[in-house]
Amino acid sequence: MRKEVTRLALLATMWATTSAYAADGVTTGPHGEKPTPAASVSLTAAEEAQIKDGKFTAALVWHEMSEYTNAVNNGAQDEFKRLGIEVVAQTDAGFDAARQKADVETVLAKRPSIIVSLPVDPATAAVVYDPARTAGTKLAFVDNSPAGYVHGKDYVTIVSDDLFQMGNKAAIAMAQALGNKGKIGYIYHDADFYVTNQRDGAFKATIGQDYPEMKIVAEAGMADPARSEEIAQGMITQNPDLDGIYVTWAEPALSVLSSLRGAGNTHTKIVTLDLNEPAALDMVKGGNVAALVADEAYTIGVTVARAAAGSLVGKPSQPFLVVDSLAVTKDTVADGWKRSLNKDVPATIADALK
Image (tube, rainbow, N blue to C red; front, side, top):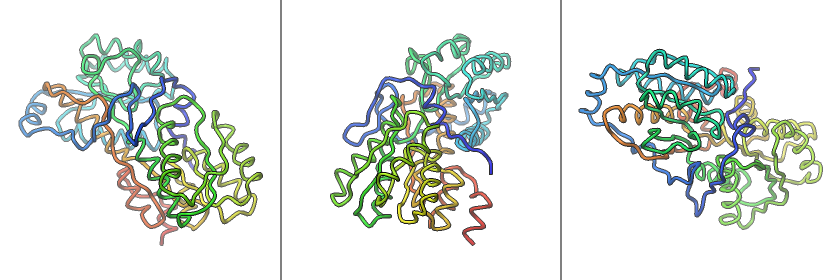
């Protein structure tokens, strides 16, 4: 089966950011920005005509390619095509900051009007994108921006997930799977990373505030994803009567799933974040996985492309745009896969649904 590594697992090892936690159920951006719904980004017919007449070009400078990045990339490609903007380059840095710097320098030879990118290491990314900024190329980012860059001056916008909403929906999905009562294990990301911090915190807050008969009785922080199996085995061994386990994202959740299977445990339900083929297959087959909460990755790509295109004709954008999330269950996996990634479910899942 194809090896998948989500952006979160990679970003967790590379990004050191100032904490920005969701307060009162509101997602905040990497620099404390207030969120604006991605659906609010629009262009008038006149603006679209002006963009098409401009013969503009774009380059997509990615951090790495994954299921998530492919969906974002496809959304951006489709929106640029709709607006008559030619994509003249697409790169994959393999999650190497030096390689991403070289990628920017390479694509600048094609003089793109726009660069859309997800910085490998925001703390040091200014030197990566400074040549593009100096050249007057419009910069638009996914998830984060280079440290020291100023919105509206150095870049167009950041587009990401509604982080609190994802954690909140994970808690609701867990409650539905357990009939609103039971003992829960909580495996959170033990690192200073605004994306996972807000998602994890939203799950915990929702359980505590809205479900009095559900209790988090076991907690474990995961700083290194490579230790997820060890953490999972420890929690399950010490708490064999757990009714459910929340896991901070999908790849570590596979370690929990493996540990539950190894213990012959068919009772404990798993809820995690992000789409993952092995986890979804277990869910469809009636296994331990109860739900996967995903963002609208394809819509992230459409939104970042549209906002960047608008900037070419003088249309400003809000600093932090967020897409909706959805809880994907056995009953909704086909529709959810399409809505999140704009593609059909993998053949393994489609066959299991027959």
